[in-house]
View 1 (spheres, rainbow, N blue to C red):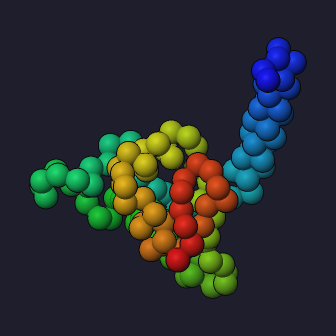
View 2 (cartoon, helix red, strand yellow; view 1 turned 135 degrees about the vertical axis):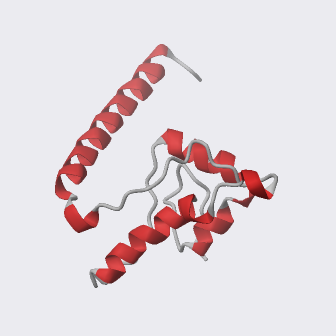
Length: 124
């Protein structure tokens, strides 16, 4: 049963989680530099269905960005396999919109596992 107290508790929990996420991302951004920065593409205007001439080129797809990140680690011989995808809700939406019902495939092809949110990626 919903009560004002349960709503406040949920709001407080969400605020605490958001602030912790912001601090973690700030610390992560400060720690990542140089060869560990892999530029990606804007996923907001992806076109994956339609006439061939309107499709987003393969090198600009999210899977190419994920592959570029793994390539950077491989070239540095870090021994790291990227298997976690953390996305802002806007990028998660863009990915779901672009791949529609095919979303698990790019996630599986890139060996990307999602901890449950926001994308339904399944391990291969």
